[in-house]
Image 1 (spheres, rainbow, N blue to C red):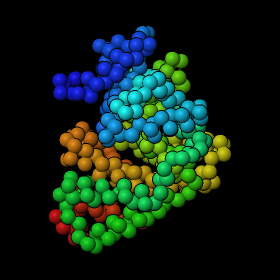
Image 2 (image 1 turned 180 degrees about the vertical axis):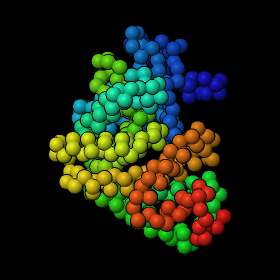
Image 3 (image 1 turned 120 degrees about the horizontal axis):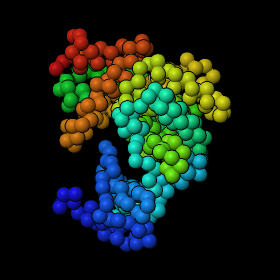
Image 4 (image 1 turned 60 degrees about the vertical axis):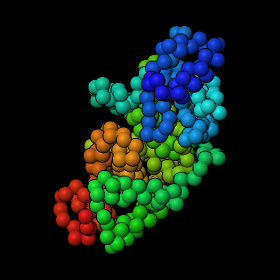
Length: 344
């Protein structure tokens, strides 16, 4: 760690007070970081490893993590146990759910059978998670969906592409956002993880890790639309799945959800439209967020995922006639055709 990393020194001091866990503090190594201010470390504790969450209290609130962890564990999901917690400093000591995320396993090279096994396990866990009542969680409502979409024109269109939208195009985009937000917020509400995708699913390596998958990074959970987390899983910003594979997993989820009594549409075609429109809202937001992470926060690695997310956006935008103006904007941004309604 860099010498100016005062939080790391504070973390070491805190861990030194937890003698009963037999922590080898000198073994601390970075485990991961994410798009927020949180970061994670692993530490050896006797014969096992544990995970430390560092969530600076000025930027992060650990209370939702504690709340949702209790809800999911009560619902039978494999989530970290909180072994120690200093809320004032923003430190947590957690059980380790395994050394590799789904994303890391995918990048290491898997057979199709191994990949299918991982994702079918994730679908089973998703159905189980959606049976947990979202009591006390914030509502993922129309206003919030609409607010999230504002990062697309501000950061992806204006900042990343340097494009100025004229009033007519901006009005069309607002109508599109209103339609997407209304559609996204409609329908049955369940517990929504919000980032149920490969970086937040831990691949179990055996009984010591618990059932596959381990689920992490759930502190932003909300009460929201039932199809949202499926869209996160099958149109993941970090993994490329063709439409045939997306459809296969979506059907398997839909069949399992119906068997479990979850309130999905009786007509798969309508359910398919719903989760694709949710994916469009989500991925337009992600394009804006990734652009902001690059230009404002200096996290250029997120640029690597933009082409994939762009293709997921195009997949949906080109399937439905309601998104004609968005298609034209995307083509202009990518230099695929001219569009007189835009000025640079």
